[in-house]
Amino acid sequence: MTRSHRHRPERLGALIQESIAEAIATQLKDPRVGFVTVTGVTVSPDSSHATVRISVMGSEQEKASAMEGLSNARGFLRTHLARNLRMRSAPELHLVLDRGLEHASRIETIIQQIKQEEPEP
Image (cartoon, rainbow, N blue to C red; front, top):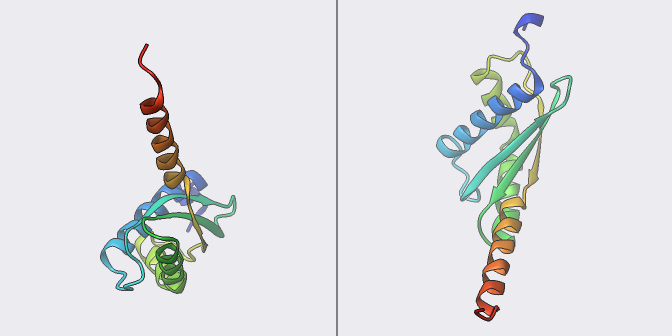
């Protein structure tokens, strides 16, 4: 990849997010990987590492199982990225469970409960 064709880390992160989400949805056959969403990707300045945030719907056991399945598929996902994004070497993938959507949902539920408990003026 020549210098002029390098992707900025932010742009590369968006491309990686899109590519990994597509690969998980259409090519990954691991039954442990159920309903997962790639919520974001942060790429190191030298593009050698990418932290991939994953949200998983389900119980704690289902989340752990899905993350294990994705961890086992890291080599496949890296190869997919290298081919799909035409990179000489794809970044090392670090998969982390993103609980942001889970927390937002819990906060929304608490707010709704508080509203229901408030007396009408």
